[in-house]
Length: 139
Image (cartoon, rainbow, N blue to C red; front, side, top):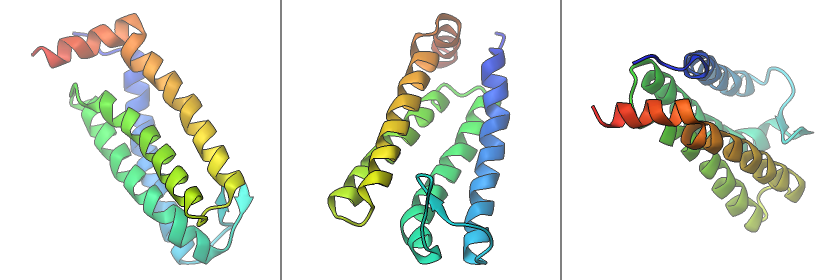
């Protein structure tokens, strides 16, 4: 069964994104570069306490996605959706607790919702991709 081109491209993207996320945590620990959340500058301490845990978990999920796509695992598309759900829940919870600025919270929720919808369409409704994953699940 032939893997869709988009999945092959996304496999490499996920691997590079995972590595980039762990590099960004290391750079923040070393206090190198600007610290941004939702396009807004924040202090190093804010970034490490608020963003770094989410970035670390998403980095692990991205590495798992890269493996899943490369190894042709049916569960890999569910992890993609889990990232967007995680971002929405995390931003909502921190916003509700007034730990996160509301402008940053809303930007995270809106971006995750939009990219999550696009991902849901691609992985679950785009005919050739949905068929590919259905066949993987039936092995």
